[in-house]
Length: 482
Image (cartoon, rainbow, N blue to C red; front, side, top):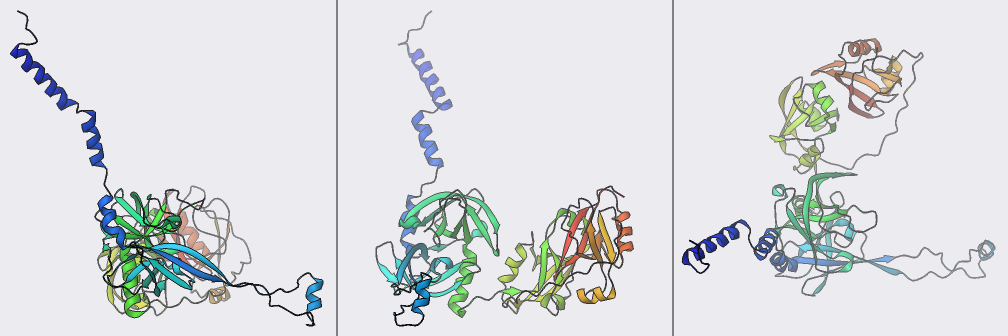
């Protein structure tokens, strides 16, 4: 028997079929709504946070370098005329203007920007989102972290909420608000590309890398998370054209707040130090020192009578913890130590001879770095020896050389005969050989050659070296040559 389309049973079957299809493949409109819901909406964030973001106009007076006017009666007039350098009247000063961004951190008018934004400024004006304009006073700056604290004469101002950059995750959405190219209250969005970035010439700031569009004029502006909290200060961009290329760097807000608090309370920034020179722990160095994995900060040298030496820290120690906080890389150690208040006693955990030991160190204050001392020349040995299996030509030091280099023992690297993969150069002095957690003082060329000859092919060995005024460690792989 055939079933008519108008039959009640047929109607139920068709309805069930359409319901099943709808469950499997939602309509295009529903798919569009789902996609839209997956993307963040920044409108509310902008409405709430933009009023606390300011634009900064900086004026600098450009002084003319022209010579003062000289009259024709002056005896030097003819001299200058002969060489086509007739002095002309000094031109009036010109005003050079630049722009930046900032944000309000307290309702009574304190705000933060980059130090380089206001560096050398004769006048700083702050423009609020409500079009009010104020002259700002630079309370203080810290060029090491590129942070400046400003103050304007105003009250009941909107202020930002400070977030925790430690909780920020790579891949998380972030938003920047600022004045790129002079365009006020511009918002751009992106993600956190990386955390803890080290940039050249600066080891105190673990930069947040983002691909939010940051351009000239954004400097000093805030970087927000989706909660509307400031997690960083937009500071630098990588660019070959002068504009945005997808690489921007922000200073974590906790570092900035520490700096501004010190500037506000003490008028300057003090930083802690323990008096050690350090380097990264490579995989080869970790193997040589018997460390289970490559982490920590390898101590190259210890300052005489410094906090670390007084506590018993030695060259060749690997600092793995500070007050229980793991030091994952050498770049982390100065960031941890510098924020500790001078005079504070801390526990420094070092790896030495295959075991950890805790040392009590009293943090001192960083002073101005002394000028570089002249590098002492390294005397050459009388006769060249044959290269060892590492390709190093070694020679003993004379008593006179030891005195000049201020070492009790050591072996000179006279030459390198062959490819040595590591930071070793002719003129270096080997102070010690480290292998499998054991450190052996280098007393003679024969002794060091014998130590190296006993190592298995492919094994790693670490040499403690002195180069000029610096002491450091270099790790090498033993090759098969004899």
